[in-house]
Image (cartoon, rainbow, N blue to C red; front, side):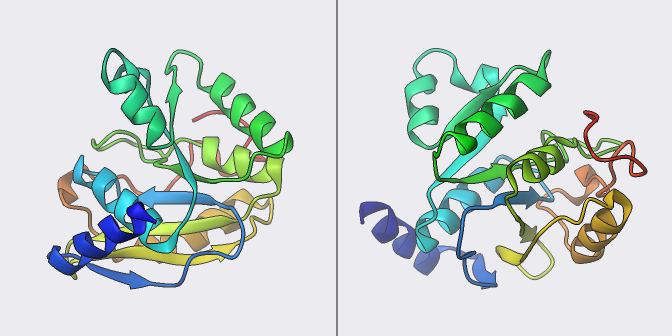
Length: 195
């Protein structure tokens, strides 16, 4: 209740406009892209709290050190050890299979810097859990943010990524120079290999 109230005040005062589609009817893997600024985190919380989505999000382990740890976990954070990213995928899959219900926010283009490829963890988690994918977005050119379509991945990695690329083609993050084209390292496989 308090989170919804905070989000209403935030959206009433923000220069950003909440746009796009309504929240998905069931938990999904929610892609946050393009991820080019720390402000994306605030926008993500604003979207989730406004729509009443119970979310978890993946963040680098250093965000959870010291006094920040309890706060980040309280906001739904799951620390990721970058030395072993496959372990976090397995943990998230286990939590969902054990009956924990949440939307998982993933920023597959990495941490606010231009990279050559997206990380494939979102694809693996969605396929292994049967969760659909929701395309969340930030678009500086229109000053809008929100949710795009929700759909089931087909298992045809190239076709699924073409659909994702088409959606994000006209979206620009807060720092467009850090945008990473939606592309997995191996779009010919099953999406199971980490990128």
